[in-house]
Length: 474
Image 1 (spheres, rainbow, N blue to C red):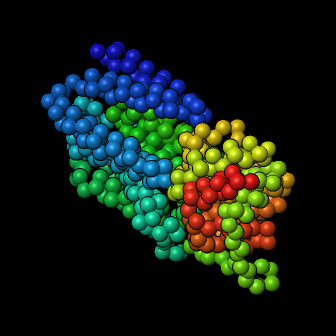
Image 2: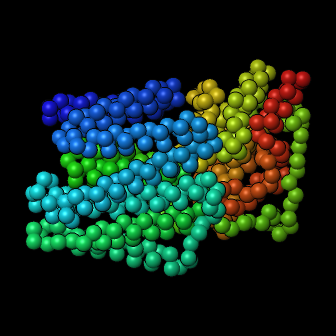
Image 3: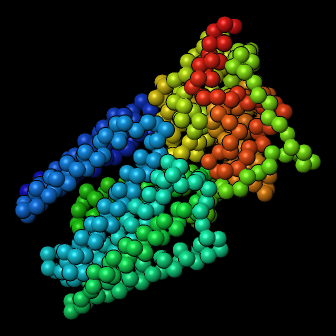
C-alpha cells in the first residue's frame, strides 16, 4: 500500500510541475490549470488511501464536501474584476488551514511530546510545526486584510499607527517566537508538559502580526502583497508537510512558495522597491496637487467619442494601456473590436502592460487573453517604453498609478522611483475614466492635466463601443 501511495504522489508531483509550465502562456494556461487540478485530485486520493484509521472517514468526506460546496460556486461566479479578491481569500484559507493543522497536531500529540505515533519528536519536526503555525496564521489574517482592501470594504490607503508600527510588529514577532521556543523546549523534554494556551498564544500573536503588517500597506503595493502572502502560504504548507511526513504537502508547498517568492521579487524590482520597504508600509494616502512648476492649477480637457475616433483613425500607431478601469467595465472585448477596426484602416495597435497594472499579477494579460488579443501584441513595460515617443495616440483605459509621471519627475511623490509606462511621451494621450478620482494608491496624476492629454469620461465599455461606432462612420 505504501508503494502505491508513493507512486501516486510522484504522478501528482509531475502533474503539478507540468501544469505550472503550461501557465507560461495564455494558449496553454487553461490546459495547465486542468492538469495541475487533476494532479491535486491524485494527491488527495493517495492521501486518503494512506489513512490507516478509517473511523474518521465520515468527518473527512464531510470536510471535502463542505470545501467543494464553498469553493466551487465563488470560483464559477466571480467576475474578472473580483478575481484578485478571490485569489487573496483562497490563499488565506490555505494559510489558515495550515495553522489549524498545527494546532490540531499540538492537541493530538500532547504538546508535540508524543508526536509521530508516540515517539519523542525530532527538533526539525517541532520547528517545522511551529513555523507552520506562525506563518500560516500570518498568511491567513494578512490575506483577510488584502481581501477587504481589494473589495474596498477597507480603504486602500495605508492604515497604521505611525512610528510605533514597526516596534509593535517586532514585539509581536518576538513574542510569537518566544512562545514557540517554550513549546519546543518542553516538547523535546519527554518529561515536559505544555498548556494549550501556549499554542493559542502563538496563533493569536501571529494573527495580530498578520493584520498589522498588511494594514499599513497601500493599494499600489497590493499585487506584490498578494504574491508575497501566496509564497508564505506555500512555505507554511511545506513546513506542515515536513512535520506530518506528507510528501504531497512538502512538494506542493515548495512549488507554491518558490514560485510566489520569485514572482514577488520580480514585481518588487519592476516597482523599483525592496520587499522590506513594501512590508514596512506602502504607497498611498496622500494627494498630490494638480499643479505645474509655478504653482498654478491646471484644468483637464475633456473630449468626445467622435474626436477620439478621428484622432486614432488618422494615426500610424496607437498604444492601448489597460488598467483596473478596463476590468471593472469588462471592456476587453470592446477594445479588441475597436483595435480590429483600427487595424483594418492601416493603424498599428499595441498593448502596453505594466507588471502591477490591475490588482493582481498578470491581471491585464488574463483579461486581454480572454478577448483573444494576440499574445505578441501585449508588450511588457521594458519592451514598449521606447515606443511611446514615436506613437501618435496612446489610449489609457482606467490605468492611473502606472502612468503617473510624478514617479519619474517629482521626488516628493509617494511613488517616486517606481518605473512607469512613458505614456506622457506620446504625441497625444486620451485617458478614459469615469471621473477625475485618484487611483488605488490615492494620489493624483499630473498626466491628466498635461497639454497633450484629453479626458474621455464614461464607462470604459460603453465609451470604447461609442468610439468604435464613430470609426465605422469614417
